[in-house]
Length: 148
Image (cartoon, rainbow, N blue to C red; front, side, top):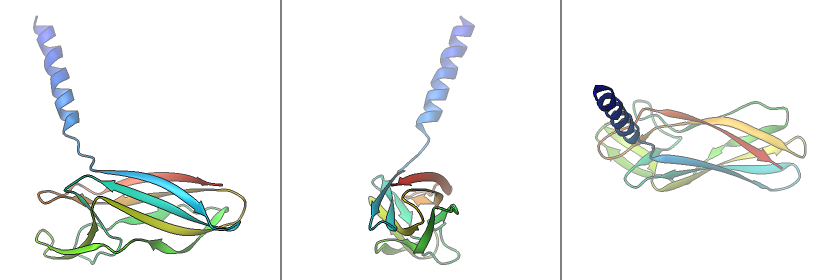
């Protein structure tokens, strides 16, 4: 009987611990070919209600800004910087400064020059997400987009 109680306790504890893991942001990836030698890679964040993701353009002393790191490849080169839409800018007491962020969804885009017919665009996006009560630790997500 003690073993059964212990097993049930462990299972309930494990399930409750898992349900407390917050993942308020999901990422999706796509591309659009502009010509035989150029394409745009899209990285979309879908953000749960009440949460936000920060802009790439955050001053020192604020939250962790969204950062894209693209892997070097002989199959493509980056053209310019990763673009983002106009963010919401508000004062956040937590950081004691105005910060730029996105709610609900945000689409980042990176123009690339193809050196062949196809390219596997790999990289990571580091981001931080907060709501009105808490901030989650910065997270890094790897991505790979096959541009054909």
